[in-house]
Image (tube, rainbow, N blue to C red; front, side):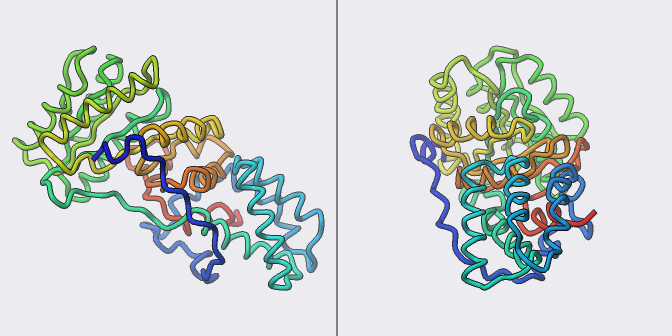
Length: 335
């Protein structure tokens, strides 16, 4: 339920530990739904940054040039100063402790540490006590929030769920219309009211409609922008009260959609949301439009919040459950 999120800071990521990940796990696409890595195309621009390290990794010795190029690649990919610094320090430490001598050994250690940074896959949480699972989705305007909701709904529908959507972003008429269009495309009903209506009333109607139609998943689109943080908190509190009156254990997910093209700026926004509301996960969009794929590591390391999905393209099917091993394999693959 949402009041377990309010005022509760996200759990800090556990201190990084030595990984016992095998090379087979790192280089393979284990966890991937397809035989083709779903992240490979999305990370093509970021992968070019690491591709420049190819010759250095092939060297029979570990050179200062390798360290300089690696640090430059990490920062250029928007891994972030703090996470980059930790990675470089960790790799230097492992070189000494494990008596590494070649660039390929450093590359293998890099793969392992990147997977550790991303943590374990974190699937969606579904209701255990209630017949209906409620997922709230937040995100600033332009982040791809509404499109991501449609992709998620389409995915859950194909998995056998009976999905219904609530157009809770009532402050923008365009947001309501956009969600309706997506609902028609994917064959998922959308519950809405007129622009300017009370979002809580929309959610109430959606829960009632879900019961009538036998829906087991309700995804709520919430406001992308309000005048003040206080207004956003008050809106979410109202929605929370409405949900809990009918579903005491809800909502079950509070997801934030983050635009990877905005890089560290998006991280600042996510950190504020996490501190004020308490997120259960993030959805990263537009990775295919940027060379900032390293942003995913900054999200996991800085926020300690799991990445649930990655938007891998513009089609409604282009939403992949986040798998750290497949992600790192795609990032460091040789084109």
